[in-house]
Image 1 (cartoon, rainbow, N blue to C red):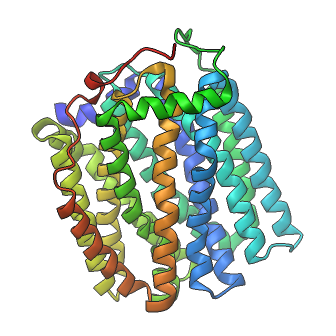
Image 2: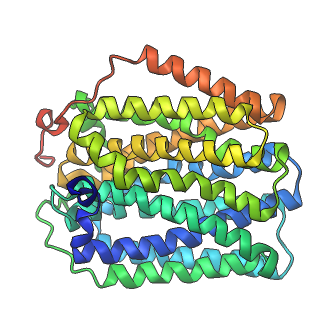
Length: 414
């Protein structure tokens, strides 16, 4: 019972609970939006490469803009920044809905819209991630990490199913409009948070000097370098899921819009059960290294199985296993990296991790999407499984420290 409670500890914090519920609502609508956009892309073009390119373009936004966003998150009021960004995201989602109602959407315009919405999320991510450690205590941080992953999976369960239901009934444009409203829910929640006084601001540091500070910090922190390397490797191979799953569902299994939503929904079911029962037990008995290795091996197994499956129901089950592995590994990496950061550079260092990860996602998305266009999604999944397993063997000595922050300097720039 204590293990179960430990996954939900952070929800006892009323501020975190309010922000978490808002993120669940917004994430659900965003997942529905993504499914509707994927279905619209498939309707407008039969190209597997353009379908897989949607996730790559979104990652490209993060790669290009997250580090400047992290600098900004350390130099301005994070609460006001998150509000401004979510208002902008609401405007962009509404704009996409209007273009749909005017029948002006085409595959390339959808990609452009995905890119600009991705820019909004890129600027939001470092500020939002940096706010969370200010909201919860260090003891609540593992629970907050699990719940953040759980939020993504609850959204991943409900959102695609909701999108799959609404697209044939009301059209993709209606889903885009609903998503616009959901961003206003986040604005309302974040405005009600009373931000604590920030003690470690460095207003005299120039924007460009902030970049040099981050580079110098990372160079002097070998433990943090390991965290970055593990994030990069993980992102490179996990990018096969968003790049190939839509292609597999639409081009191999020939799923309807509703069943496509169920495919994405299935990827969120496994992590929900894992967050409630598996994750706290693993954290009690095993190190982060062992947990991440086990999660990555589960992903390798899922890739091999999904390549062999030809029935939609079997793919749904395997997708749930892949989602569990993804969430488990990602949440352990997130806890490790948050504990490794000093607060004075939290926004920039979070941005650095996100930038490295999303850069690897872009590279992986291009590789897997190109391979799927040439050899098909099934063979590409087999290739991803073999290469991921080989990388885990070759990097077996790349261990994460039990307490990475103990090796780092925690004072601000001079």
